[in-house]
Length: 100
Image (cartoon, rainbow, N blue to C red; front, side, top):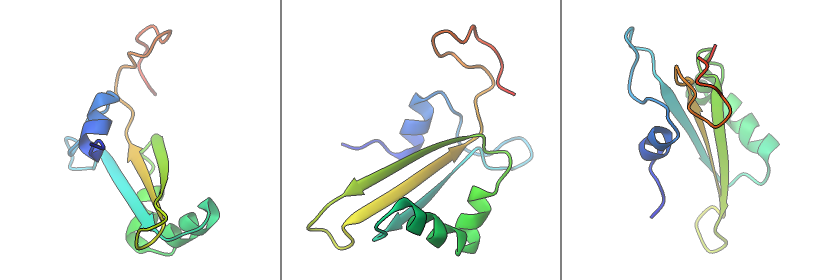
């Protein structure tokens, strides 16, 4: 079973929900049917809500995925996950330094 956005973000060490002042800690853009990355980004930028997500300055990390399913309705499915970096980075070699 594929991970949900919340489980994937949590497993990667990011928080989800809303910050102390109500700002989102993560967001997701999805699209279907676009043939290439330039087309999907152009579609997102033409949509007010998707554009706002892309331009949210507090998001410092992004994960992007493409799935192809030839016999499905749209054939291609895109997602972009945006997140605020966790306060401490537990990745190997990081020394536990705080993210900016």
